[in-house]
Image 1 (cartoon, rainbow, N blue to C red):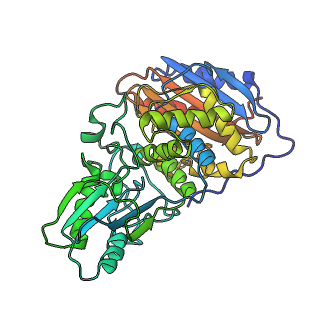
Image 2: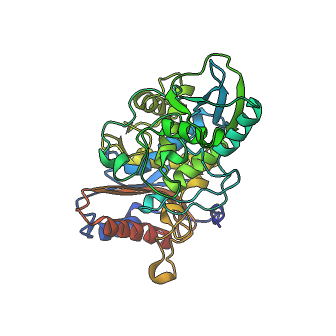
Image 3: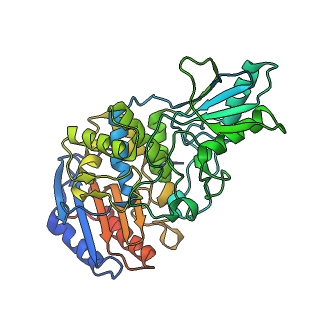
Length: 426
């Protein structure tokens, strides 16, 4: 189970000092996997003051730690209890139905009440604990529609993914992210199981909406020839069925814990819609930066919501600022940022780290952080409590990681976070 939130610090706990942290950072810089460039920002949550900075104002390639700012934007712009609806409505002709996407990539083809499997693959898709609400089910939606249709035979399924628009892949994405790595599906408002060919595998459909339509057709008319094609629902069309995602707050938790790229891109587009921007990569990026600017956060330039783009730039100081705000307790609506962060040695993309020799380290159960990995970047950003009880927000981003040294870079960053957790750093 996920460890409880970090307890309040002791009243007498002393604030760390830059001098107390300098030795830990110097030791990390001596590691060849991160010696190229290491940016560090460490903020004391209680005071909001930086206690240590190294190139903290430099715009770096953040990788998946971008999901932290996406999460803050989502929780700032959308109601925490908002749910994303997928519907089936009547088409223009008898026997025609329209499957309307509501931008919920967690919609599953599994039976209602079935926990979704974790797709096999790299660490960024690591364990998701079973304490999250279950996703909406296409089987449930098909049963509702079948009941509403009565004896009418379904001969045509139209798929409507018009809620989102624009390009399906972002500038700065590696061409193989969809077809080879399966790191993300082509972004659209309608997909089942994140657009995967199978829920427990990474490979993706190149046309997720049409695949969703074919899945619905097989449920509504098993064995029959049913045409599936793109289109739009008519205004005011009769609703035949509806399923809804878990609340946005839970989706944010899942996005962070699992480093879910599809969910990050979908939620960023919902921020765009809430802010009156086009539901495109550009619109989502503008909307996210607008929300952050309203919080006084600068130093964020985005090309996507997931951090897969090599055009994203974020300063470590910006990330620690939003993390400190979320951890301060002044805004309860930001709490899913904290509860969604992977927990060292226990949950999510940190579940298999901080377990040296199988016994654990001082960081296990203490460090809660979002990981970020690209070919030459390794990042870790989150929260930890020092031995003296001070709660720190931190961002550690190593750029210029040598080819093949990702695991070593991760180990170096983990060692630095563990050192911070084990010391008073005064």
